[in-house]
Length: 439
Image (cartoon, rainbow, N blue to C red; front, side, top):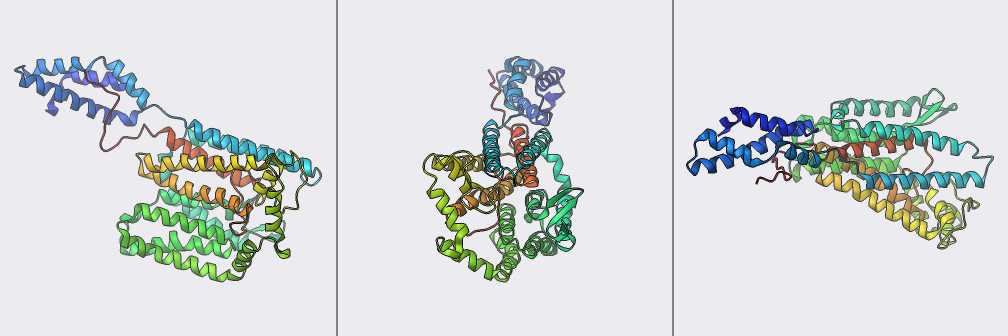
């Protein structure tokens, strides 16, 4: 009975409803659903002996006031702000700022400019978060391939030509700013992967090319930079995305063969260092493992309420990055450490919900990639601080000092908020407008 849509009364009704709904991508689905309700009602009236036109007019009347229905639908499909995620990130950022200030009061001369730089990068990061929150994340998909290539190119470039203060490093010099491309590249590469052609669409030769380009090459570059941990994180992200987009389990096994082989070779080439790190973890209190031993000792000596703000550093290296968690526990106590663990779990749960429940597959894949990176970067330093994970160079997001990392981390939070903002504004294949109640 789709010809009933030609009735002017039906068109006016649908137009008046949609006029109230600001989420324009939902208009087609709303019209389709409402039209189905009108058709069903008109068919029942015609079975009762009514003529077609009176039956259609009566069916429209029984739907109720279009403005009221439209306002109800607008409330159901209006933009959403994930306040819980925002509060968690805010608490993490406050913790990071307090930690920076605590170090500042520990050694004023050495760390004189660090609080100012922390606040500056935090302010720029918040700006990026706001911009990405109001940006429609779906528009970024068209740039996924270009972003992946550009970041991969810059990563390769700094491994050959990167210099900072005259030394060969993984930094990309931009004026007076040095960007650590090793740490900066991880999130953009994996998030870009989510918008590229999925595995179930790959042909035979296309699969080989994608394996070499998207699976193997980044692992090789991270291995060349001696960043075994980043090789592991990238491989984990690629594995998760491939599993979510596979044709079947057999294809998944074939796809993961080369990346896992590359990762294995990378681990073997760094075997001596890995064995040292493993030995440190198993024997944290021996004399040559002072880093791990001091970290554990700092946490043990913290007590429930810590040694206080600005407490003297308990001989922890990289206190603003790798060792920031044990230092903060030393200052603010075991209760603070438990609170950080709870915040970490809550943060990951929020992202996991997006990766499981969002209507848009692209959004779900992006959220999954972000969860992999943030999950490892948050959990590993916590486990490393208490001596049950090998020592690596991996600064936790939000609470560590790293400037460019802070920018990219807050920008990615803005991306997650953008995804959540539109969770009720994405049309579904099945439709379904629960807010409409036909009288």
